[in-house]
Image (cartoon, rainbow, N blue to C red; front, side, top):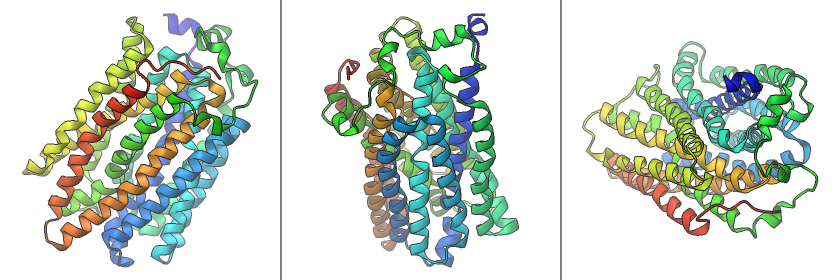
Length: 428
């Protein structure tokens, strides 16, 4: 009853963010599903593919740092628009590439464009939601990453089989322009929006420290590096983001090489993995929001939730004992779901600790750190797999990588706890 009285337009905004993130990850996922076809046509080794992934990761890292401050300056509506146009055009340009180097170039362009999604989306959530609802809102829009990864294994093989790999890039890349129409019709910040009720506006700004978030003075992002809470977010992203990128770019190849999965047909194992991550993203956001509504301090709710999710990743270490594909799917699904639950909460810790006027910059800095990890980890993964592939023990290479994945989240949690035990808000 209370939600009906205050209005629900903020959930329309989350729906827009959800579909943008879905498209973001759909475009990102296409190359992983086409890898077996492209590596034959372009004679890629595992190391070549690792370099292509690294090109995306490097550009994504640079773009996050640039887009974070850029969006804080020009606002979320225009910032999101520019980001989506750049990444959609880059996604479509994959279709005209003629060389491995060319793929590296267009992947870099895609990385720059896609880097605007999360700094913009997290800032939008902070603009439209009080702290007690932010993790759930973040979990909902963040689940779009998983839906995109679910849609891709159904959509891309079908397009590949009927129209060829070039059209897979063109069709998926063009979808973003449809979303853009709805974004311009339905989105504006709360203070300028004509459809928002006063009761909902007051609810959005109900936090005691809401006044701190007014965009009256600008923050230089270089200043943020001298703050302890910045490094709390940075370390958490650096150690855990690369794990998700591994799941995104190498899982299709893992199932194909280890369990002979045919990637030219819609893939039920991949669909199940990414469906589980949607549940994890929303459930993870709900859990910490539930703890807050029960009266827990915000920092305790976030940290307890993240510790639980870190523990849920550990069983992936035992994937080496999986004797069939469905055992591996179960273990990987749990780990991937736990990552997205972790992700919904770590993003929200940024808005817990920093005022709104600096939030896109902070998300950009933390995202850059995650991308630096994403630059280094694919290089490590590619070399490990290449080494064991030549030795005829490719599965052993994946087992080593799963061990790293299983331990990363607990390590990140302990370091974050040491740096910022109570995640005190920063006064800028």
